[in-house]
Image 1 (spheres, rainbow, N blue to C red):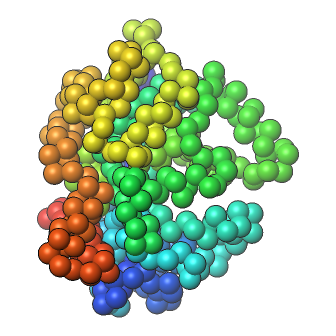
Image 2: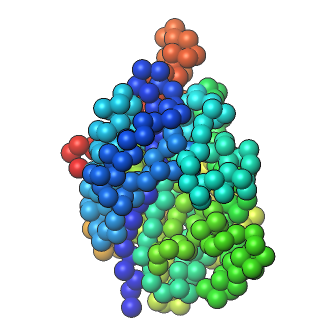
Length: 379
């Protein structure tokens, strides 16, 4: 039987003060409650108090997921605005310092703060997670093994974290650099079966290292709570439609690999050593310098790789009715990701005589505005 391939998206936002453009270290106590009252069970606190997380319900179609995500962005923005705040969908803030940030006072987060130490306090980063429903346990592991190859391609389309503490870090996704200070991150190993995966998780649980599989923070993982394969490598996309496009591509790639499996064909397996080289290139250069095609043994420009993915998943995009959303990835190429545009806005402001701080403020203003593009129309 074909998996359900249901869809769920989670996004994390940073809360900024509209006047200072800086991160809000301690948002008003009633802000989260007001958000939750409008969307029960779908808006949550994150590890740091300056963050807020949203999650759509299980969706059958991409259009449904887009509407749900737009509604959640709209709710958070509306409540935040009443307090002079705004959410920004960016994986790092252009200039905020991490030292003053406070973590949320909850048992899980208190334990994380104790276990992880200083690196946990630096987690002023946000991501986007995409859950795809795959009910069969062994199939979920098999598809995870195969789709790892394409994760750098999705990361390159989503980058939104070029700045850290007021500096251009010369990486399109600096978020991953911060994230890598934590244990159990990065690309997962290949597993032969769900049983083997459970055995490895059990070894860590039995040793008292982790409580459960939710403490595996890989780029992709079998969800510990749902029968889904959760993609976690991507930055959060500043523009709503870009998030929908990345989710559509991930969903279609999984179905494409499932179709191959029906014919007893699998995507050629590659060791993490090779996959992580492309992961680094996507983190460093984004769309700009291409990724390695290991079949050809050379670096291929990203536009060529994207066209190959669009062609590979054409049947699946038609099946899900999301051809337009998949092909909208070409628009991201044409205008650049959020990271490209943030750097361009910053550099243009400097060239026009702005100080460094003024230029960074312009980037924050753009992020707040871009986060809401297309939201009201879809909500």
